Amino acid sequence: MTRQRFTFNRLELAGSLGDLGTLLPLAIGMILINGLNPVGVFFAVGLYYVIAGIYFGVPIPVQPMKVIGAYAIATGLPSSQIIASGFTIAVVLLVIGATRAADLLGKYTPHSVVRGVQLSTGALLMAQGIKLIIGTSRFQALQQAAEPYLSVQHIGPVPIGIVIGCLGLLLTLLLLENKKLPAGLVVVLSGIALGVVIGTHRGFDRLEFGLHLPRLLPFAFPSAQDFSLALLILVLPQVPMTLGNAVIAYADLSREYFGENSRLVTYRSACISMALANVISSLLGGMPLCHGAGGLAAHYRFGARGAGSNLIIGAVFLLLVLLLGEQILAALYLMPLSILGVLLVFAGAQLAMTILDMMSRRELFVALLMLGITLGSNLAVSFIAGLIIANLLRSKKLSV
Image (cartoon, rainbow, N blue to C red):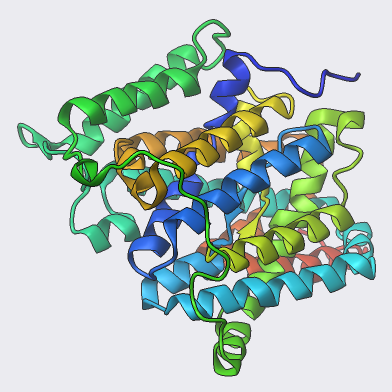
């Protein structure tokens, strides 16, 4: 069954907003903590959304690379090392894609491992969503407030983020299958309206409309030391997670959702796409970018079925950057973090429930064990362990 490549309606608009819960906290964190250029960050994101949507013809998620982003924010790494990591991982992914190593890895990755990656990623997204709602995420800890951009922090004894999050969850459950009032659109617009009414309006006094173009290499080109440190502490831990989640699990999920329409979404094209995006993002002073099964699940769950969703959200980011420049953050601050948490909860649930097609105890054991390893360690270790365990369990001498 083929669908129209570019459709523009309220469902595509709602679906285009589904992945903001993953994108915004890490992006804003790397701007505030690591000093990345906001114009470069969001111009690269918007451009990648548009180009990827036009080329692939189906919803394409655009996300920060989570291992790099989380570690950079936690340790306060300088922007030069983050830029270096973007260039470095671009080379790694280009080599993997050009040599078709990704195709070989995908071919020999068991179905149970793919589902394990999707289950684990879904669980992580849901957990992060709950943290955003109750105010305990790393970003909120760094800001020393559960809702740092709202002027009201409590309703009686209850933190306002919990109140907003619970109402958002209920509203989403009520509207999740409603095509006239798409849940994602209603929840996001309600959150923005709340930010307009009770937000701190940080940065509004510096708003200056005009034409703001990104600069090429807004920072000095990274040094040899930046590249060596980036390779060891950022890129090497990121690669296994990227291959597991942003290449294999992502491409398989795209085929599952869109069938023949996603024929251009292959392991090889995913690698090359991310490589090119990271070159552009690094040149503009932005963050390392990737695809991701979780992001795709988010777009799909909230209504995206064609590449129109990519063009919508890409155009939103590009217009905000061009009109507001570095003060784009003032507009993004209007969104309560608890609303982003709501989006993450439902995106994670959508992704985790892909395990419903698993029939055997062995397959389910691999997926559940990978979930446990992810929660105890990280997704990169879980992916490698899953490959080993799934192949060992092919022996008839082993049972679970």
